[in-house]
Amino acid sequence: MSDKEIVINRTDLARRVNELGIAITHDYTGAHLMVVGVLNGAFIFMADLVREIKLDLQVDFVRVASYGMSTKSSGEIRFSKDVELDIKDKDILIVEDIVDTGRTLVCLQNYMKKRGAKSVRTCALIDKKERREVEVVIEYVGFDVKEGFLVGYGLDCGEKYRQLEEVFQLLKP
Ligand code: IMP
Ligand code: MG
Image (cartoon, rainbow, N blue to C red; front, side, top):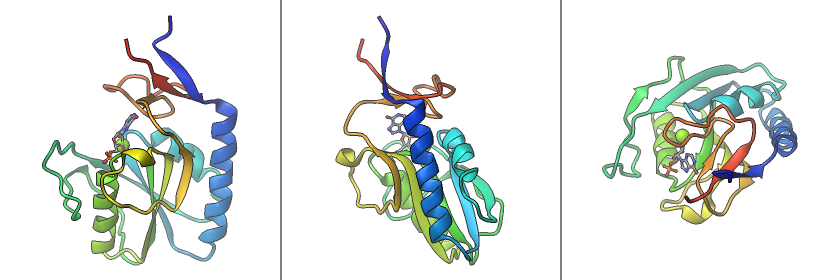
């Protein structure tokens, strides 16, 4: 028996990423777009998404240190890798794999604003809206998923499964 079942297939991923790219291309025409991916989970989605954005843009990444129970939604965040390009006056598009409680994203959005970004929006491949603990705005959502722990297309469970081409839900043993 398989330990996982498919939730989003290759065709649907490609179609949705293309649609997101078209929307972002439309909305950011004339902007100073910098796409900031959240490592490690966003690496595959980000690679596909930027190729669907038909504009000049810059690419950078952040990696957020795990914060256990101590995180506040006030904008405090600890990076194990910060952005390296200058954020000031840029139109920042944060690219996340999945938004769960929303705590990571709130912190990231506040951080980008504090560093002087001209605008900050977010594109998440998957929104697990029903698990939200803090209010957060996500302008571009790929898919709404209600439940389950998801892996593949960048998403991991204990650093495993990231390279799978499709998104799966792990089944309970
Ligand atoms: P949040 O601060 O609770 O929204 O945390 C979101 C982060 O938790 C994501 O960026 C993922 O790294 C991780 N995460 C949440 N749910 C899942 C899942 O179903 N599969 C894999 N990673 C997840
Ligand atoms: Mg993540």
